[in-house]
Structures are given as structure tokens and as C-alpha cells.
Image 1 (cartoon, each protein chain N blue to C red):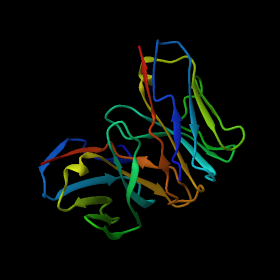
Image 2: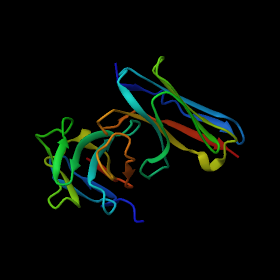
Image 3: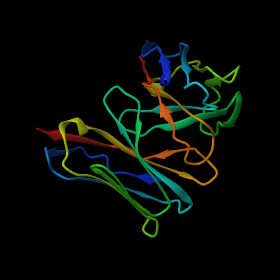
Image 4: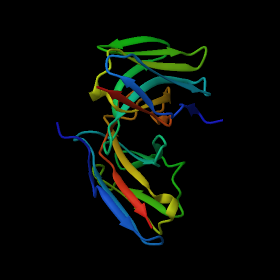
Length: 115
Length: 111
């Protein structure tokens, strides 16, 4: 079974530039998550989708971050404009459903460096 | 007070030693408790999962949950160099799969 795919793996940009990350979840998984993991910290949930609807985006900085999952499969996360403090690893995860205890499977992440 | 506290100090142990990791939490409503392992430059992978209080054993790994003390632990017996990784505790509420993570513990097992 193929895992969660993410691209690009690494990205370096200047502050105030825009950047987008892509995620392809495990086939058949209805729930998709984007996490931000700052160096030395645990992952922090940014947004959770159930199919193509948003379940939880309470911790998404909506003035600069946006995400979509148009067809309920792939998802993109965008930052516009980027700030220095956005330097982090952006992890995508998927689970079969949104139920408590449904295992979340993580992708390898995209490491973003903002200069 | 953060929801989940995990002392992030790195831990170095000789091969074969027992590794002991723990987390405390503040929200008594947490019901699902997990330990994830994260190798360098990789995403976290689920290692152990426990619902409510109690112990769970899987091979060399044992997870314990003490809800009365809001304290969870992970023990690794007969540690191997391949166990060298960062271990993250995570927990969630009933009816909500949003995970609250600790900061993670970097473990190095020295051959």
C-alpha cells in the first residue's frame, strides 16, 4: 500500500514570497490533515479535511495560509506571503475517517526555509 | 500551561538498556493516547496506541496510561541502535481526532 506522498521535499524562499505544498493521501482515506512542525517541537495541526470539507482550521493563520482539497483526494497548502517564522516542516497525514483513534499516517514532510 | 508536556531533553543509552519516556497532560478529557516514532527527515509513524487507562505491550515496547495522574509512559526494553529516533507522545479527545503532541524526546542508543 502506497503511503502519503508529499512534494516538494525541500523548499527555500525569501520572506514575502509565496509557496505551495502538495499532498496525496493514502487511497481511500477520507480525512486529511496538515501539520506544522517547528524544529524541536511536536507537530501542530493547521487544518483537517473530511473529504473536501473543512472540519477544523482553528489553528490556521488565515491571513497568510490557505488550503484546499477540491476533489476530496489531493490537497495543497499555500503560504502567501511567507514570514521567517514559517520555517518548519509541513507534514501531511491521512486517516480512513475522522473518528477518534483512527490511525493517522504521515508523509515525509516538506522542509521549508524562509530567508 | 501547555496541553501536553514532554521533557525534550536528549537521551543517550547503551544498547540493551531500558528506555523510559513520559508525558504529562492537563486536559482530563483526553481518551486516546499514542506514541509516535520519528526518524530523522521522516514523518512520524504510530508506535503504540492506548484507549483510556491501562498498559499495553507490543514486543519490546510497553505503553502505560495513568489517567488519575494525567501521566503516560513508554518503555523500550533491550534497546537497539535502530531505536534511535525522536519519540512523540500524542493524545486526542473522544469524538475528535485532532492530535495534541508533546515536543518529543530524541533517543540515541549507543552500540
